Image 1 (cartoon, protein in one colour):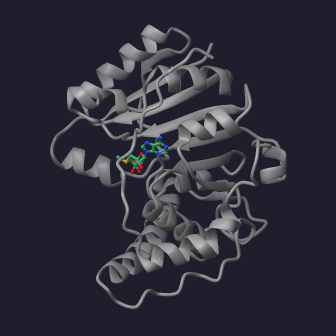
Image 2: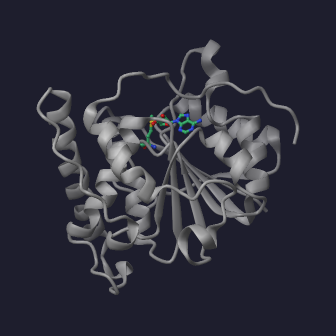
Amino acid sequence: MAEHPRVRTYAARRRVSPLTRERLAILGPLWSLPPGPLRPAAAFGRQVPLVVDIGCGHGEAAIAYAVSHPTHDVVAVDTHTPGIARLLAAAEASGAAGSPAAGEAPGALGRSAVASMVASTMASTAVSTAASTAGARPARAATGAGPAASGVPNLRIELADAMAFLEERVGAATLDAAHLFFPDPWPKARHAKRRLVSGRLLELLTSRLKPGGHLLLATDHTGYAAYAIAQVRAHGALVPVRAGRPCWRPCGGFEARALASSREVIEIRAERP
Ligand SMILES: C[S@@+](CC[C@H](N)C(=O)[O-])C[C@H]1O[C@@H](n2cnc3c(N)ncnc32)[C@H](O)[C@@H]1O
């Protein structure tokens, strides 16, 4: 692989609340991938289309994708510990939030049922997060039953730099899709090198996506959209097109704020031929 500069694409954050620490300690081991190279069959107990959500934040889109695509597996990756902790709590709570019972096909849920399940799990975790941040005694995280007892048995979580994860643990032609929703825009020119869409990411995706696999990118930053398309075209291995909004994705914080401010959300799909 060509040499690409390694730069930090995320903001450094230090403070970790007791609730975050507790969620990570109890739930992290249950929901994380086994260490070492990613072997989908060992991680999920089956071999089906595999999707990585890069910079998943607190995981609303990853959970919604997992619920609405029960025959796919999803790995949600972020470096942001409070976001991953909230995602863990929501994933753990998903079994009790109107999601399909064990044995029932999650795909039987309609779009509005997926949306309300995701909204209710995310809302319940937001309440305990807010209480903890306000200094209240943190609610105890679920003791942890793990994916098998949840509404998202097809989801795993990695608290990691997605670039390092792709480079060091994901083999060639492993992924069917990568999702990159509302990446940090790093709008100042001197910070553009920190954008996730870069030669390094594109090189990694070109190798890690299967032929016919694709990257889905959404951004409300028109400058970032133009930059991303230019980067993909300059790299040359993936073919970018403007795409429609995926109907399974909840209208989460970044998208809702963009629409409330009349900013367009631009959806790009870049396919590996
Ligand atoms: C603006 S947030 C968007 C979160 C989420 N995708 C959403 O739509 O709500 C961008 C996220 O990307 C994460 N991020 C940035 N660089 C990353 C990297 N190299 N590896 C993993 N996560 C990264 C940040 O920590 C942050 O949570």
